[in-house]
Image 1 (cartoon, rainbow, N blue to C red):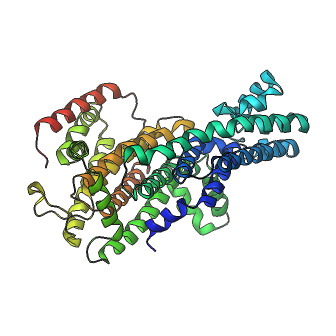
Image 2 (image 1 turned 90 degrees about the vertical axis):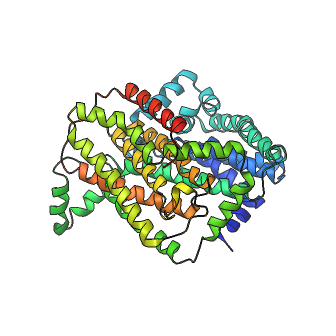
Image 3 (image 1 turned 30 degrees about the vertical axis):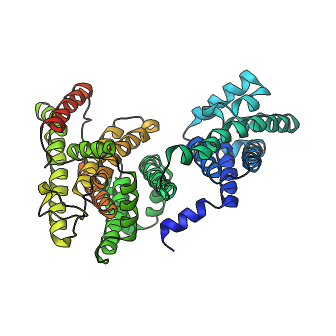
Amino acid sequence: MPLVDTLHSLTLNPPLLLCMVLAIALVESLALVGLLVPGVVLITTAASLAGHQNIALAWLIGAAFIGAILGDGISYALGFKHREQVTQRWPLSQHPEWLARGARFFERYGAWSVFIGRFVGPVRPIIPLVAGMMRMPPRTFIWANLASAVLWAPAYVLPGYLLGRTWQQHLNLPPGLEAALIILGTIVVVLAVFFSWGRHQASRHGRLYRAMVVGIRRFPLLRRPWLAMSQSGDVPLASLLLLVIAVGSLSGWTLLVIGHDGPLEMDLFVQQLLTRLQSDVSVTVGNIFARIGDTLGIIVLTLPWATWMLMSKRWDALLHWCGAFGGVALINVVGKGLFERARPDTPDYLMGSYSYPSAHTSTAVVLFGLTAAFVAAEMPRQKRFWAYWVALALALPMALSRLVVGVHWFSDLVGGALLGLVVCALTRLYWQQQARPPLRPCPWRLLSVASLILISARVGLLPPV
């Protein structure tokens, strides 16, 4: 059975959906874990699918109710029985402010804090843990837990359930779109987690970094290269891991693509889906993003920033950016000529050009991925994940525009994205070889406005290239 059909059949299985709702409610209420999981988004999605399949509302609310009770109950038990150990372990050992915030909330509202805290996002996963550490009587906690869950479960489930009951009827969406949206959402979440939480774990303050340090100390042969890489500060573990994963994934994906005579099954599925969804608006938007991401669009987007680097005499940064763009352009030219994969459609301005990998996608990933990496390096550790979320939100529509205008297969986009990650990792590794002064202060507002004006002129006045 194809992967798309498998995921589609699983997501429409009523018992599985109920288990998903229960698990999401439990995890979102679980101590500390709920801070790292987008519970509202997940439970709304699961409830929407359940509503679309006409699953009984009572069962759905019951699953959320049980999950919420179990999550808060486990958190309370952890705080009650393991008070000292909890504060000494990750993530509270690195984020004591979370516990302090929950303690202040508990001191202010007392026994009512468990009831009120379930509806207050920043403290919801902390309050049951704090209640246990503060030795709240178990009977008081149980009553507060049950009473709050009775109200919380329908409040969180009903909006998604209502959406699921109405969206197919009113939007008249084609069959198969649910599976495509689920797969796309999964990809977005996995990428965001990988580049935000994953990079944090591979930094000096992350658990993965510390675990590798402990392991390397036991092997004398590994100490010298580790020390050599750390001369300029932290060992660039995140960039090294990204390079290894991206190179391996790109190699395997390329073998899969060239091993098929013609498009993959997923390429045909995505093409058929987009054909049914195509409209004048989608084509117009797709062409706009396609022009933003072509060679001329990238040049005008980056021109103000390159000018600032020249005026600021930041030759090192400018050379690294030029090397990244030049490298990804060269690899794209070589790859297209080597694999000679035909496009779904070839307009006049793309005559003689091949499909794999997608140059628009790889260039967009290099542009926004490197920008996110440089910006995140200047931000506090707790806020760095926002840079990667924004980068993903900007690169994704630019890549998908190639499907909308019909000049690439979906697998071309995947290959282009992986290629872009390889170039990002290599560029960051070269940049991190020595300690460098920060790029700030940077007039980013002025430069952003200049880029916006130039790209608007490019889209409105010049043809695609």
